[in-house]
Image (cartoon, rainbow, N blue to C red):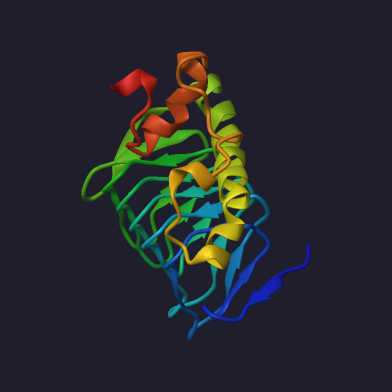
Length: 191
């Protein structure tokens, strides 16, 4: 596919869900972000020791660090997690919040890893794997719905925000809200 150059961060990005401020350092290689992926606020993505590649439909949590690592399609990297150089997170995998994946470690497809140092906790269910893509799509939709906010100065009252893309927690089944709980976001199922 094609990549669009991000002028402010030295990143290539085909996603519209890149949060701010995402820090990109690309001295040793390129930083590539796939389609419909999202990188949340405070994330640090660098490529000092080689390329960093983030696949399609990936959710990268707030304040995480990805350093010269590879993340496959439909993966979730939890808040505050660290992917050290040479680590690989294969498609449809989940790295828990705060986990530190050691240099050169491979998180196999369909596995959940957590801890410091990170280790395999268990295999994901088919339902959990299916929700990874849904969650990524929702984050990108929310980001797109707020693209105009910076034109208004960034801090705008809630009355100006269109909430059509956010889940209606009163009328949404718990199983559709659970992916947000994976990142530690309050939802109906974990309040």
